Image (cartoon, rainbow, N blue to C red; front, side):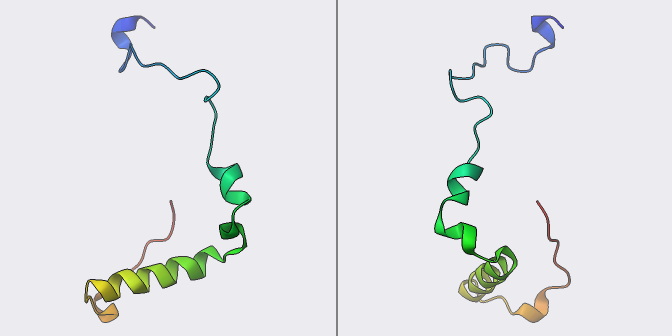
Length: 65
C-alpha cells in the first residue's frame, strides 16, 4: 500500500492510546449494575414523553448496536 491509497495519510494515534476503550471505566461505574434493557426502555420512554410522541406511533423497534 502506498501513501496515495490511504484515506488519512497524516493521521496519527497518540502514544499510549491505541486499543483504548471506555469499557473498563464503564465496568467499574454504577452503570455496570444496571439492566441495560430496562435502562434503554426507561430512557426511550422519557425521550418520547419529552417530545410528546405517543408510544402507539411506534411500529417497530430495532435493538442492537
